[in-house]
Image (cartoon, rainbow, N blue to C red; front, side, top):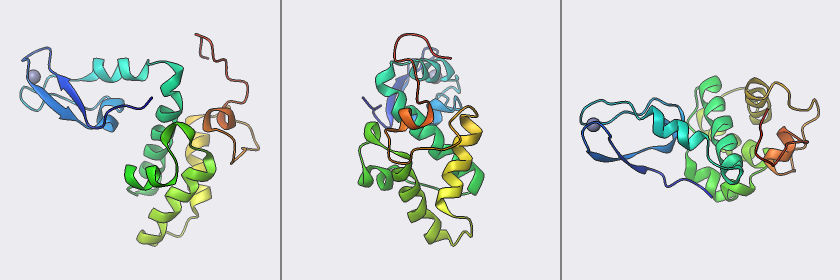
Amino acid sequence: MRFQDPSACTCKSCGHTSAVPVRELLRLTAACPKCGESFREIGMSMRALSNDSATFFDAVQIIMQVEDEQGLEIPDSIVEEIRPWERLTISDLIAATNRCLSSSCTVRSAEQAVVSAIRTLFPSSPDSLDHHAPLLDAIVPNRDYGSSYE
Ligand SMILES: [Zn+2]
């Protein structure tokens, strides 16, 4: 699955419904535009969603990390042109990053940028990352698909 982006969120404080970007919800920085009530709980519940959304969430996390580390903006539309979120590989993330790197003339390579982000977010990821495996398998080869996460 993937989240509706932006997502319609109803404020539990004032009842106002607004369209909120998924990234802000996942970053836990979203708030009601009318009264300022934090949407943190909504973001937390999105984070806790089932394994089906784990690839999407990991991909968004990696992209946000690359953006933060490199000072880039990688539009969702560029990622979506390459492959559906739930089937992304590291190679796809590198390709998406590369398109944004060249437009902003950054010297670092897209591969370095993506691998650096993965190392930061997933310190226990394998030394040798499989760029063509499904994202979850590449980052956590022995991931437990049951109810428990480590
Ligand atoms: Zn509100």
